[in-house]
Image 1 (cartoon, rainbow, N blue to C red):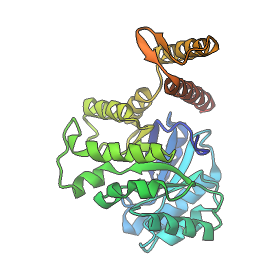
Image 2 (cartoon, rainbow, N blue to C red; image 1 turned 90 degrees about the horizontal axis):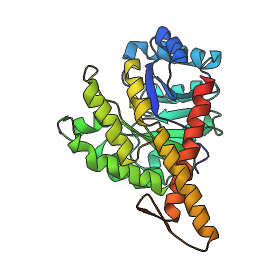
Image 3 (tube, rainbow, N blue to C red; image 1 turned 90 degrees about the vertical axis):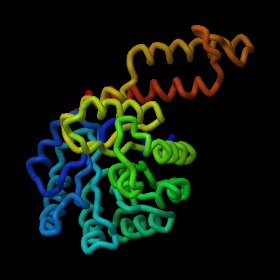
Image 4 (cartoon, helix red, strand yellow; image 1 turned 180 degrees about the horizontal axis):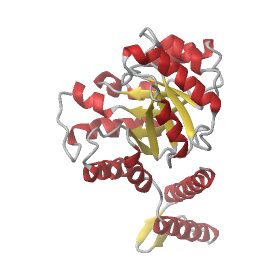
Length: 292
């Protein structure tokens, strides 16, 4: 398993320009916080936001939540300085935007290493058609990639597509990202939903992402959190079924059988691995929630 794997059911973007929001994030039931220095921050607030985020990370208090900082594009006037400021703070990872190739990954890692962050993993944002087409190359670029984060709002705009409740315009891109992530053992998280009033569509988006194989979903407002966490949390009946499956197949193996039928379903070795992974994820979620 990827050494950087952990629960990422919910990843909340928190604007660096707002100290009150940076503080509030310490109290929310969220798996990861993305302290944001990127595009949503006005140009005149970039420097102050960087200072706010550095102070917030150094101050700590986020418990067992993963603390990620999204920096500005390295080609922007702020990206390099963002990386230099963030690298020594104790953040858990740095999220780099606009990653479209292995060369972009190499550039991000070089900037982070030069800033003293060679110990840190990175996360990469997939937000353009070119990035989707090269997502396999990106996922394979480095073992330090902890997570692939989809930026579906940007992507759907660049596709000239329409937002619909079934997210049909994104199905290919989402599936391609999951395939690449699983091929190279990376976590992968779905993008945000921008309609803050339509909770029915948001819940559907969470469950669609879960069923496609995503580890979680990013979001922009705390009241979306319960839907994310619920969708990506294994349910008691799933855990009971996984335990029953493991016991049945292990018993079959002791009897010299390679497969077994459980509740009318043919169970093979790959089902055993999936069941163990589910139980492990559930235990990690339990420990995370106990520490928040």
